[in-house]
Image (cartoon, rainbow, N blue to C red):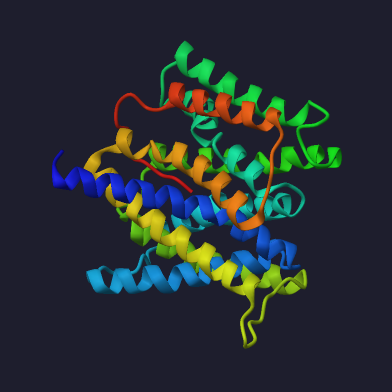
Length: 301
């Protein structure tokens, strides 16, 4: 095996592990009493600092034109602000591992969105993959013993909001492009705009987080989740350009697996046989909906 492919595999595993750990870290933050708009503001802020440093090191300009700001605003809304507001709220009520399983629906939900936008052709195999994913959700929702508390089932629809928005985001970028910006510029612009949008929402709802020393576990969880997201997304986009989108798309399996692993390791979560059966169905569905050829533009949350 060529040395560069060993590097690609290592980066793929790192991205899966980094994205997977964001769910238990989010669970720690919301369990401590922090709420969505406050967490989202700092997610934008920390991401902007990291991506800004990367952008300066590359010597690239900030996205400043009106069309760039409009595009970055849309990405900030459908890629972070709206889905994460739903996700962090659901994370307070649902186990972290369940959230990781639900997020695996992104490539499955992207298929019907792509069909509606005329970006993909109908495929019975990929439709079967979507059906398997939905059956996995039913295995979590319907059996009496699938969740620790039956009241949790009412929060599953809210957890589905995030993967739906991420699926829309990916297809939006594929349909309309990025206005000439690269991935780092898009994420940096979206982070800066997102800070402006999230700050007043956090203040008006009483959710704004003012860090005080010494920082505790919940605060480090927010920092860690924000850094993991920004770094893994940047590496993922780099991996797409080097190894291709079909290879990079395999990160979906790793995100699910690592998400469950981290939840068991950090939060000591346990799952019923119904949930493990749902994992099997979800992974089978992912295998069927994975792209067979590289799309023109790839975007993930």
